[in-house]
Image (cartoon, rainbow, N blue to C red; front, side, top):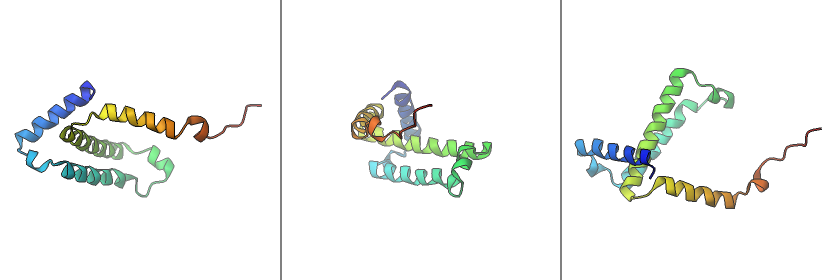
Length: 114
């Protein structure tokens, strides 16, 4: 994991240890909590148009930021519980996706300028 993610993982571990929450942090439970938080992340966008979703009012954007943080925190805890290096896994997945979806094959074709 990158230093910042590793530091975040350590801080989360200390936070959980101080509260004796480790007993609840089985990978299954962390994955379930992550899905719940992802659903909460979607809620502020539920009835917005695409344009509205790009221009959130400040209070909505802050609420979305905090839900994004919840998703990240559970994902980091899950990675820690399973000893997965998230940055390495993400980089490997990007390589897989680049092979699966080569840009020349999937990028929209733009007309040549006149």
